[in-house]
Image 1 (cartoon, rainbow, N blue to C red):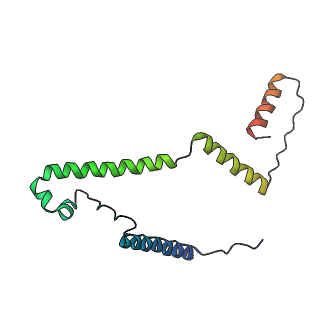
Image 2 (cartoon, rainbow, N blue to C red):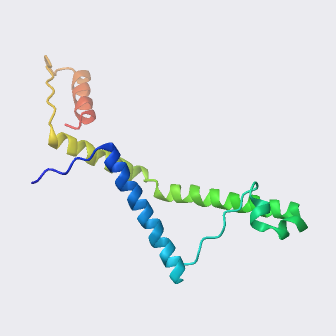
Image 3 (cartoon, rainbow, N blue to C red):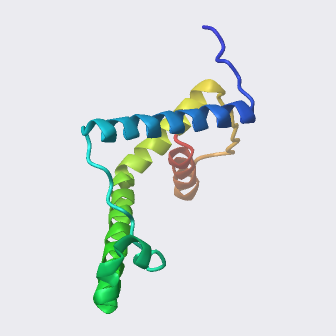
Length: 136
């Protein structure tokens, strides 16, 4: 088939940036139309006074506690999303196996072993172990 168009690193970066900007504009449009609700302001300890204003001046200790809890909730949600996206050991092995198979199909590697005689059990075992390790 036709070869894929090769882009320079600068071009790839530009396309990614444009896509990101377009996604953000789309999201802003949906917020304006009321299709999705706007995200809550991300309150941190250093912008606590700006975002919460009068509430923070009335009881700063409680507000700081609330903000720290919110920050921890965001961090734990982030970690949980990462954990959910992580492959299970079986999936990871399957992915690695598929990758090795694809690589072997594209450019096969040939290895030749010379064994004098296979009379001893030790040598038979070594050959079988090599075969399994090299996926033969």
